[in-house]
Image (tube, rainbow, N blue to C red; front, top):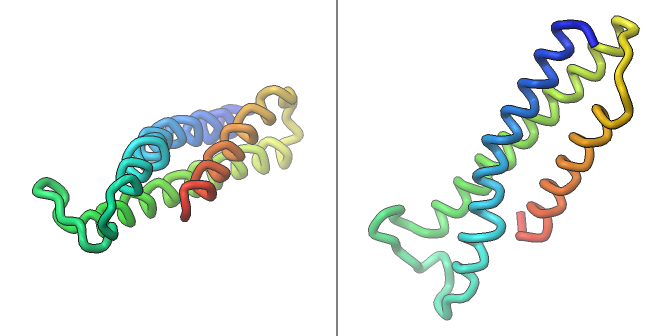
Length: 112
């Protein structure tokens, strides 16, 4: 990999790390707890977040945007490496693909 492709690759993984924080927070902690309550989420009001449904939607949207930006950076790094005829190993390609598959499946299961 040349320098620019490597920077894009690392940038995509750093963005993925920030996105995974909100991904775990939304899909594994906040959304399941919200579904355990007996009242509709749209009527719930939190003293910290205000309207709980709006908070959930903004967290979900932020997670989706961050994951898509990370995916775009990853694809740009692979494309730039391909244009420059650079060498890249299979584990370097397959690891982020598995991470993105996990993230989007988790978002899909949680109800986006």
